[in-house]
Image (cartoon, rainbow, N blue to C red; front, side):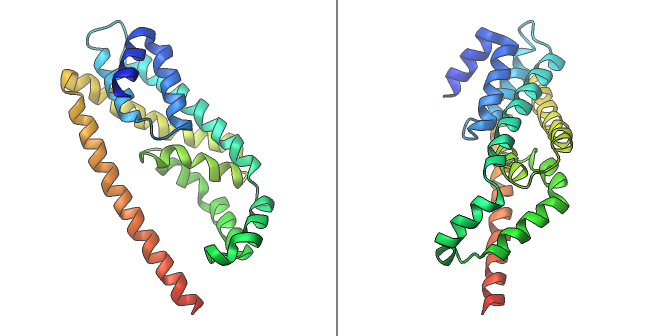
Length: 200
C-alpha cells in the first residue's frame, strides 16, 4: 500500500495528496503519516512546496471529515434507541446512557474534535459522533480545520526536514499512536469497571 501511495503522489502531486488524505479520513487504516511525511520529503526534490502540500492535505482532510460528519447525521439518537431496545441487554446499555453521551458531546465535543485531530485513527472517526450529536457545522468545520492544519503542518515540515530519512518520522508517529491507544484503552477499562461497580 505504501508504494502505491508514494507512486500516486509522485505522479499527481498536490491532487494526489488531496485525494489520498480525503480517502484516509474516510478509511482510517490508510496511514496519513506516510502521506504527509513523504509529501514533505517531495518538497526537497520536486516543484512541490511545504505550504502547497499542507494546504492540499488540509483540504483533503476537511473533505473527508465533512463526508463522515454527514454520515453521522444519519445515525441520530432516535435510531440508536432502536438498537439499544434490541441489543441493550447484551451491551449493558440503556437509553439514558445514549442521552448522557449525547449531552456530554454537546458540552465538550468541540474540544474533543480539536484534540482528536492530532491522534492517529481517532482523528478520522471523531467526525461521526460529531455528526450524530448535531454539532454546529460551522464550529465543527473551524475546529476540524485548526486541528488538521496543525497535524499536517508538523508532519509535512518534519518530512521536509528529515528528507530521505522520512520513514523515521513514521516510526515515531507509530510509537506515539501506540502510547495514546494504550492510555485510551486503560481509561476505557477503568471507566467500564467503575460503571460496573456503580450498577452493582
